[in-house]
Image (cartoon, rainbow, N blue to C red; front, side, top):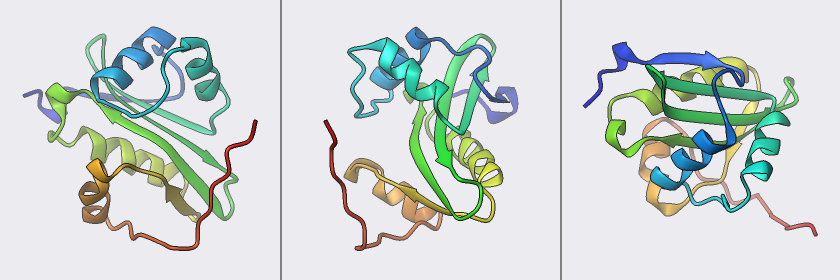
Length: 135
């Protein structure tokens, strides 16, 4: 297992490519549509916060958030390479998201696969959220 001391955390898009992100999403596995790398890249370009974790030239993890910087933020994705899950990389990525979104309420959607992880970090489930897919 890779130790977190060897991991470099970067703020912004430096080093990222659509192919690297899609490969990470497929391996993580992050339950997101990845059939069009251009759409994935567009999401990253439009994000307020993009944070990546690197082990040398290898992308080890990524977090992406949207925020108004005042009251609300939304954690869009957190993905970590399976080979290094459990080493603290996800927590380091989230700590940077927390710093970038300080002072706001952070909302996230997740699958049941990761619910225990988020509870352990202090997130709580809420009942007052709604979703609508726009066409």
